[in-house]
Length: 119
Image 1: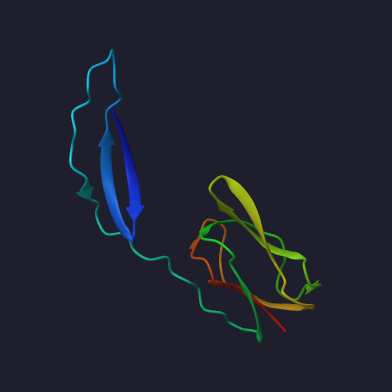
Image 2: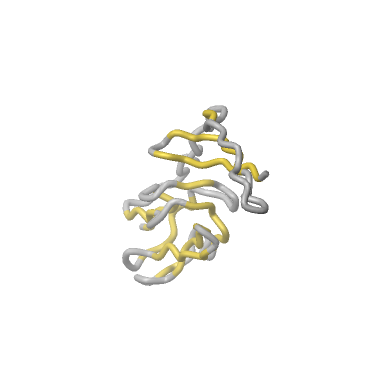
């Protein structure tokens, strides 16, 4: 048996799956709603800029490439998120200086979440 936690339309379920062995049909079990999962907390920007750097996909913050005060050009990687075992760069939408980094490594983020700001 293997246990999995799955999310369907925003509802989280804990399920147990039995593998078919020797041609016998597995015992079917009902999905049981899991304990509620708290939404990821987004940190407040201390010195927010006017250009937002947003996550293109939901995932976890894997690496922070830029630091506050660093100049970046359009397309430069600011943060890297991990989603479905892939590293996805979150890039600067235009030239600027990093005003704030609003996430930390390991934070869960939703698609479209503001992860940093530029001036």
